[in-house]
Length: 189
Image (cartoon, rainbow, N blue to C red; front, side, top):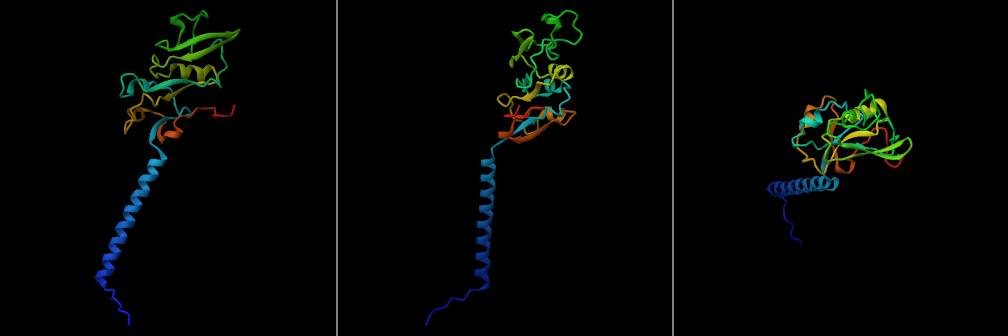
């Protein structure tokens, strides 16, 4: 005859408790694994919301802001009269310092062919003030846009620029989706 062990209430509670702990630990492990697989999150500036208020240059915790001007070359018209490079009220069309819109001369203009010029941003000089972006958007096609440079950003838990932004243009996104460009979809022209 088989010896059947009686399953009492105490054994049932102990087993239930152990199963509950095992399920809980498994759930925590799955959640941590998903978070690790998804990658870290970073701060993202949405250029379609940006109003070029200038606070990116003054609100960052870094000495020089991590927000920099980015040139979306595929959108650029290579204008001779670039609204992001020259002041709108220039009397003479020349590249003298007093005619440049950028306060730090972070934009370099290079002749391509008549009447086209290529504009490059010197990242080390850019302070993220947005003056060139505002000028390009007002008189051009908006190929100059502000973006957070993730190599410079310290990825604060609560970004000081995001708190100061009047347009609510900052958000946290997955590191794989870190850069948005207004009016341009990567891979499509």
